[in-house]
Length: 49
Image (tube, rainbow, N blue to C red):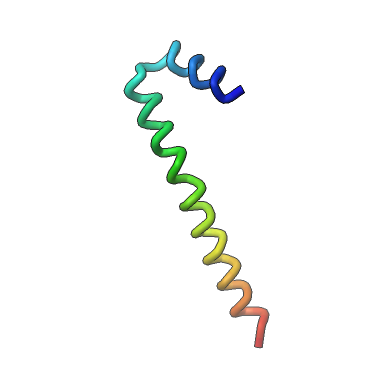
């Protein structure tokens, strides 16, 4: 399924943009995990005595 989206995107946009977005997609899980961990740590500090 993801291959279909990739080839569809390459048909509409330049290849250089598609490859740049694919490289950024590997950073997103790292950033979202870091953000979620910080929020949970902040919540734990507020709720635990």
